Image (cartoon, rainbow, N blue to C red; front, side):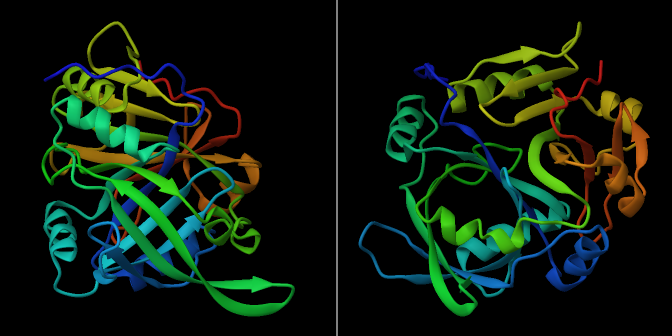
Length: 304
């Protein structure tokens, strides 16, 4: 793999969001509401495959859990399009998290870096979807717009790993969607179970231009920190030892870490199991994977 220019700053680079790929968003919505999340309305997605090109249905739709910092997307295929086919293929492997989006302010630079590094990124895509709005009591609709830099399916075997720039943050992060009964306030981390954590971590270091560190004396756990949020790679053995969970397949984006501004109130609602001063929730089969709630300001998860 060719060398990539290292980023000199993490200040504008974070874990923007993750996405669960789901066959039945209705069942998933019920499970999320039961966990105390406020959901955005169902929204169909469209995209332009090239700058200035025609707007076309993406064949997918979503609902989101908007947090004060980052968000969770729940994505489902709706039509027969190449994009929807990719979702269906991923869901065939497992229901759960298949997408990690790094927030960026410089997608063109990220595209150039990935090209120079041999990742052969796809042409940046302009995505958009219509979002209901509510301003001064009046209801309406606005267009949420994003620029996304992706690599070809399979280039990052863990899933759809991409860069995302928001052009309409006020449309996406509407105050009415930021309060959750379970007191969730932020996306703190993402856990990936892989056969070789050291290899995966170094590959992501090339992909992002950020440093990674071994999170223990062995190669069983590695971490990448951004300005807000981290990735944690762990071996199947460590996953089993820590959570009593066997990976359904490898690689597997096993779960996420969520900040809470009132962990006892979260515990009362979600009834999670205590784990390292956190609450472990094994998600409903309609969602898949794990969710760890922690008190805001907690340091990265320590598994070794």
